Amino acid sequence: MKKTTNMAFYVPYILWILLFVIAPMLLIVYQSFFNIEGQFTFSNYATYFHSSTYIMMTINSVWYAFLITALTLVISYPAAYLLHYAKHKELWLLLIILPTWINLLLKAYAFIGIFSQDGGINTFLQMMGLGTHQFLFTDFSFIFVASYIEIPFMILPIFNGIEELNEGLVNASRDLGAKWWQTFTRVILPLTMSGVKSGVQAVFIPSLSLFMLTRLIGGNRVITLGTAIEEHFLTTMNWGMGSTIGVILIIAMVVIMFLTGERKKKGGRRA
Amino acid sequence: MKSLKKWKWTNLYLIFVFIMLYVPIAYLIFYSFSAGDTMSNFHGFTWTHYQELFADTRMIQIVVDTLMLALLASLIATIVGTLGALAISRTSRPVVKNSILSLNNILMVSPDVIIGASFLIFFTALHIPLGFLSVLLSHIAFSIPIVVLMVLPRLQEMSNTMLDAARDLGSTNLQVLTRVIMPFITPGILSGFFMAFTYSLDDFAVTFFVTGNGFETLSVEIYARARQGISLEINALSGVMFLFSLVLVVGYYFIQRGTKSHKAKLKAKGAVTNEATH
Image (tube, rainbow over all chains, first blue to last red; front, top):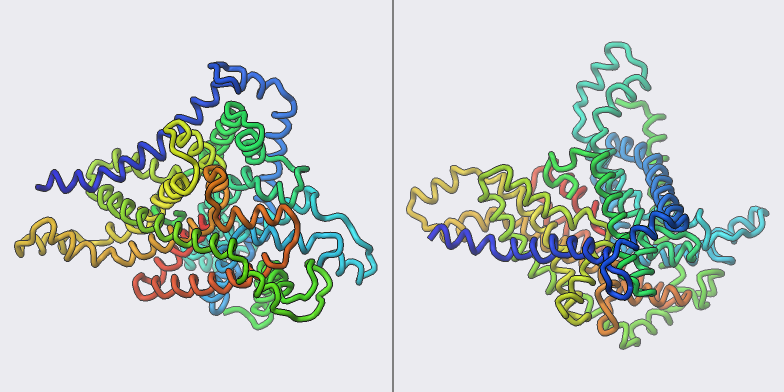
């Protein structure tokens, strides 16, 4: 009896793991060894590593992701810290979360309006007598919009980290004569590092693959790993090369996860 | 306590971040009432774009399809995910448990393009036609892990004495499951269902890869229209969707309230939003 009910629990879930977790990952690696004519080859990897275009694109993509992560971190850490001490923090938190429930594409679309030639920003600049500038389809706009979208995902894990901080340690540090920045760098920051790491992970990995933003906001000027994969799969139909870049992206993801480590220790905190 | 001056400063920064987060959304909704046809120079108040939106049968059809898809996908994902959580909680060997959990989390951390591309290869290899079925299967697949992560903590919180008591009093395994375990983990299941639902509604990238030409969701449609330029009908749609999100958030807030301790609540929210749009 017990045996059979146990099996009933396992079967659908294990099937899901086999079919939708393991099989697709193996398939993308497998596919990366085939060229556009369907012959087995290592040429995709050879092309990738010998082509300065691909290498530069990868470096660029990582660089953009780094900039986006750094920008969101700089804005989010103080916000999360102040949120912890704010009155009505439950309400504030809810207000920070709410924008993440708005469809990502609608937010991107809003920026098409705001950044356009006669959009909000340029109207404002003109009123200030600064003239109009080209914002849409620049690297700046891509980084700005991506950071905008990612900020809540950085604030939340850091906020959770700060909430877990033992207030007694901060007070002890002050009582023992530490200046505020000493308390911050020696006590608060190290103890909230796990939150920062989860935040970096939650922002960096998606930033490598935001192809819809590069299309809508970056206007094909910005090409990330995600854009290249989408291009190869859906436009040029070169799935082999697309998969090769996919494998590179998976490797990048594993490296990031390794660097930001210890993520699963507190099950469920960062979904 | 903080001095009055400091308190003001902290609020100022938070208000700044808050404004940053809401200006684009407000901008979008503001122009949905403009009589013009671009997002610049407000041309006077009108409901035209909302009328257009509600008269657009193609758009209405897509909204209905998207909601049906999200409901169906999240329902199935909730069933499979709950069974999965039960299975994981019954696994006694830590090594096995941890490897299953790692596998569970792969789809949560993978970038959308990887999920989309690998599912596309998978469906093509199995000759599953691209369309409603492939989109549904993908949505179920990427929603399962969040359900597991929402249900599992509840299962782990449950004390074994309760199960022992039920068994000592003569319950069968099935009775233990339906009378003791299920009521206890219901809040987790509801949160999981809710999260799966919003995942499905929000997804763009995975759907974009596996949809082919036959089936469209709202995200894919918005992307297609946004690439063609500005149409204030999309702004009107944002207005409607913002209201809908408000309702969802309030709904989620009430599901969470009272079912979890204060701290667990905050954590769950973190978990919720961390992946919500990814």
